[in-house]
Image (cartoon, rainbow, N blue to C red; front, side, top):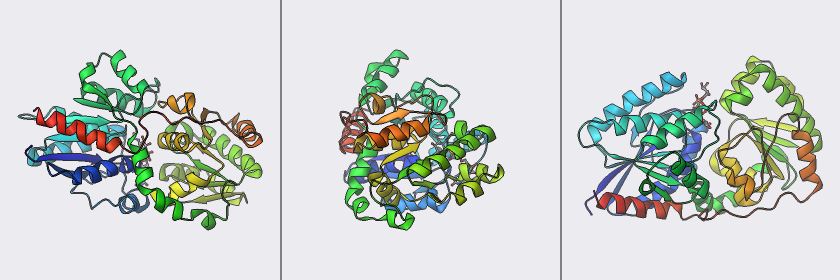
Amino acid sequence: METKTIHLIAAARPNFMKIAPLYHALKKREWAVPEIVHTGQHYDVNMSDAFFEDLMLPEPHHHLGIGSGTHAEQTGRVMMAYEKLLAKVRPDLVVVVGDVNSTVACTLAAVKMSGRRPLVAHLEAGLRSFDRTMPEEINRIVTDSIADILWTPSDDGDKNLLREGIPAEKIERVGNIMIDSLEMMRSRIEREDTMSKFGVKKGDYGLVTLHRPANVDKRSTLTTLCKTLVQVSQVLPLVFPVHPRTRKNLEEYELLEGLQKASNLRLDDPIGYIGFMNLVFNCRLAITDSGGIQEESTYLGIPCLTLRPNTERPITITQGTNRLCTAENLEAKVNEILATKGKGTRKPDLWDGLTAERVCESIRRRLSNR
Ligand code: UD1
């Protein structure tokens, strides 16, 4: 096969661990020229550079430098910048991952490119929360409806896409690429000791992350959540690396000080991949609204309480350790987990660390037919 240029779109923190295994797997193929395109949606050192370093990624080959903004601003700026790059580079394939604004923006720019356009593949396709108030749900639906190749992590993804009328030949179940990163980095994660930095012990703390607009943007909701976390921390020490969106709102609503004063609640800035995963591996339970942590905890068999009314990752509930909860019932659910051994887990099919290999094979097949 002739060499093929493949763009891997990386934009925000949860994207980096999805492109890393694929970048490394493509680098081993002589027919592939993988290029990382960083849109710049996340730009702080601890939201971006730290992940590139931990995941052994090179400097991005292209950086669009978009930064923050409203949804329309961010999406529009990525589309304009990526369209220009596409006209110059003309890749054979564009891989978008996850569900952030840059995912949909790059997909739109690539599929509407004039002349011989690249194929667009969505990695982590088919996930649905059926909650259109979530910006990510809109990004998922739009991306999946116009991309050419849809790589799904689980059976529910295939079913959702088929129900939406997507032709079956576009859909391929490849498994969960985040698990590839976890397995690729496992020995370094296990060697790390983030716990001592926070003065907590293995199996004796809860790990908290919160960043969804529905949880952190509204004063009353965030206030209730903060009160609940302080209460929970009296039962189980909590480690809480704070996302920049959340920190901004905690400051604005004058809630930060109250959290800092709670003696069993350890706040910090966001932590890189290896250090953070060390906290995931060793925690008693996770309290989160992240998508990725629902999956990682299911894979590791660690109880997870998801502060959301729904999830686009239902397999983490049906097979895994995840449970949905609210600020009101969080404390009771934590107590329930502490009183029992917690929910068992069954690793979903194809969450095996070999997803990047399956994706490479899919790319080879699809591009050699072109
Ligand atoms: C974005 C994604 C979300 C993903 C999350 C992971 C969308 C619509 N949302 O949400 O799906 O789960 O990333 O983190 O794409 N900020 C910084 N430094 C940074 C990045 C952001 O300070 O490096 C601050 C800015 O004030 C910014 C705010 O955080 O306005 C929100 O960032 P943004 O990228 O808009 O959304 P996230 O909440 O991070």
